[in-house]
Image 1 (cartoon, rainbow, N blue to C red):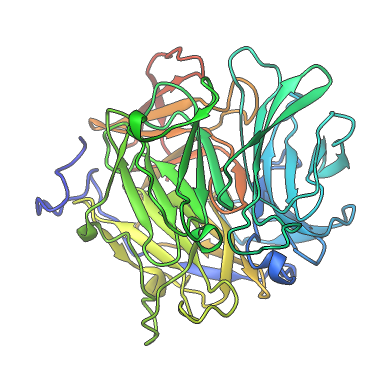
Image 2: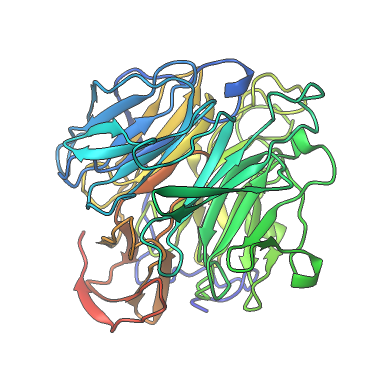
Length: 490
């Protein structure tokens, strides 16, 4: 372990520097809103990726009943953040999107989730795309899709896709207790073969990763609001083609699941999991046996009530994402918040969370001081460095509100490195370790998680004041490379 366990009262930073002030400034970006009726109460994702090869992340934002938007990053390196809206073929009814290199040509493509036919957009370079859904042999269907994740299984040239669907719009007894089935698309000659995965419990997030186990598994986070009873968070074994149950040690946790964020939080080299929900936000620490235990309440991550104003009703969490926003070597947590629409049981004014990790493993709320406690109905998001200054910035898609981008202008931040790994075959599933002063951080390259939002950018590690670190990569087949020294940046 890299530090004492929670509650030990150590109160020290894990690396030589403690963080300075965390500050963000909102920047002006092209107008964009995620709108629509009840089919767009959920969704509202954003894909963050470099679509023109300039090493600055661009944005593809879902618009719901409005067209999706493509915004090219025109930021000054190390300076002001700016985006330019560019023309693309109009696509409406988009709930979210995920970047990955589907065809292995080195150019990132997009898996676009919709209310209606899902689409695969081939990246042509220069932020140009063409619809390759039929050409690639993918069955886009006509469901209400609200989650996606992908991996490359052993020996496969193409990725395996999971598409999570929400309420079955054709069920006359719906919408309650009318969750649709989900889909697993495995590559075959000329395209993909679809397998229906049942039962479905209204999937709002999914992630294929090794997690704490010895092989890639599919985790699905489900919305209790619509399955009402009998549903729970699911784990599917891709090798054995079955859902895990009690005999496998899988605890059937039931919550209003909306987003998944996975990363090693406590330094034991096991990826922990943050699950957003209406009410408690649930952090689960991974165990060596492949299971999970709920974080103690004192950890400070449950964030179950608004921290601004006097509305004491339950909060509504959507996209969660880990990122070291002050580069002190301790990973922090952003959670996008916002009422579904007008749910009376939940807070109407529901600020986003930015939870800064302390040296003892607990978290403190800093979103107000940092300037990111927006009261819009936030949905999908991305925590990423937009201007190549080594500080993680923030983008959030809001329902019926403007898309927001904040530049990280924190004072006293530590040093950092980025590790670039391809988001395609041979890259997805790679584990990257960074060692500094006896502390090892680990991240896995994945496609999925969040809330209908994906990103394909270099992995970012804050490392405090360490000028030189060691980096090691383990490929998806388990081949472990050597430790390599890398200089860090300020």
